[in-house]
Image (cartoon, rainbow, N blue to C red; front, side, top):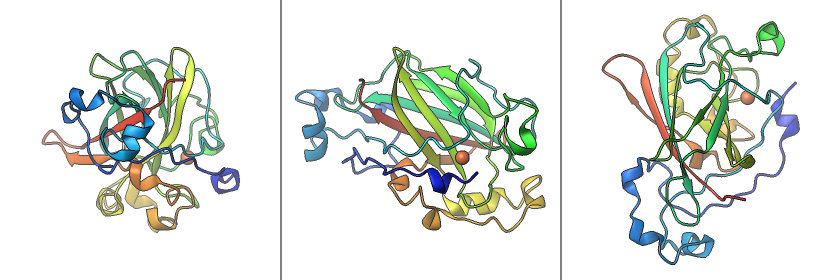
Length: 229
Ligand code: FE
């Protein structure tokens, strides 16, 4: 199945300018006063509202509550720090359940296709801490036919889904990572960000800020501004 066929109109609820901004310290509480969507649109509130992007066909509900989601699958280590803030006030949301899933280095999803015998690898849920941050240990995702490299995410607050999106990587970084095994066994990925039918609907606002870690691998961060419903 191809996610492109399931694309629904992305709802761009965003107005923030600094897509790459991250880190709880970057919000100023005083800016939250007189907040709300209008303030976000006017620029008075600077947190980023993350675009809604299609869930795609590979979601499995009820994933495990765990930080390391690799199940031992190989790949370049990737730590994710995903911050959740209230899109109206820019304040961190504590206790949100962040649910992620992505393809392994070979481009397979657990529960589907070549990964159908296993319904857990590269899937997991973490709760945000007092700073609104959920942390995962995984590996850099592989690519699959017709899509740029991405990680799916859902955010639940008190049992309600408040955000469904996808997180992306700069293509230059992916090129660098993919020169190494196991990714190099599958050269010639088909799709880059600019030609991805989902990325073009606001994916630029969902690019992870990634840095190399001295311990090896990468750390990816993003702030997701959501509306509690
Ligand atoms: Fe996908």
